[in-house]
Amino acid sequence: MLLTIISGFLFFTAMLCLSIILIVNCRMFYHVLAEPLHIVSESGLAKELIFRNYDCLIDYCSPFYRGALSFPDFPSSDSALSHFAETKVLFSCFYLAVPVFCLSGIGMVCLKTWKWQKKALPQNIVFDTVYRDGIFWRGQGGLWNGSFRKHFLMEFSRSLRFTAWMCVFVPVMCFLLFFTDFHKAFYGMHHIFFRNNNWIFDAASDPVITILPERYFLCCGVGICVLLLVGAVGIVLVRRYFDRLYAHNNRYENVNGGVEKILAG
Image 1 (cartoon, rainbow, N blue to C red):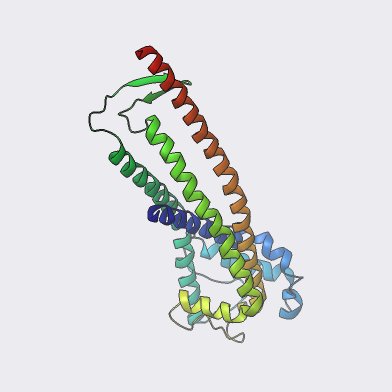
Image 2 (image 1 turned 120 degrees about the horizontal axis):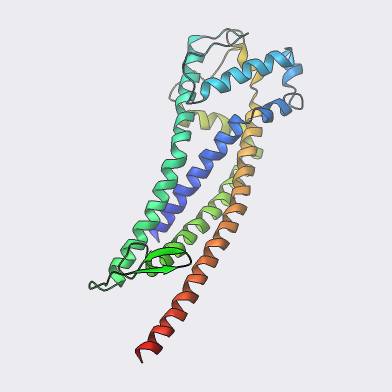
């Protein structure tokens, strides 16, 4: 059960990082919200100028961007540039976390399946290869044998079920937190991820803060939660697919086992 929880949590973390990446890189998300959030009217800047500098910041935060941050139209203090450099490192970690946590979760599922197989199957296993459904499968002694495949699908489905619950539970808790006191949550999040106060900007020295109001980050948080909820629906569909594979594998083994008993008799 512990390995199932760990693998499910790893898959959830990967989905959370992916949701953050999608929201941050969806520039249309910001462009559409610029006027409803009164970013254009309150900043007193032209829409084209706002979008140009925002896009420059998003380009810089990408792990694939090389070079220093220099806004086309805004001056920047050393503390602000230091904060954006830390933000770039944080986003780079999100990019790296997606494949790492996905592969780690799959590895946990394989580990649990292997431990079950090592405990359940006898030591004197006969190796053979059979041709089935256009694919060569290793027999009872192979790594991807029927027993291993069946329990891998079962454990993977269990991990995805835990992930789906996390993708529902966490957004619900976040919604309650956001709409109770987002300002406190916003500050708390910065204290967790950043060990200094460089993220507290002065509009006089760093006018970029005028185009990044707190309410925009609230919308980003809501967008991330919505993506997680959509991911939960996707996971349910994937689980159904794996459950069908598991059921099909059971039917095949039952029929194949019956034929073997008849031939042996």
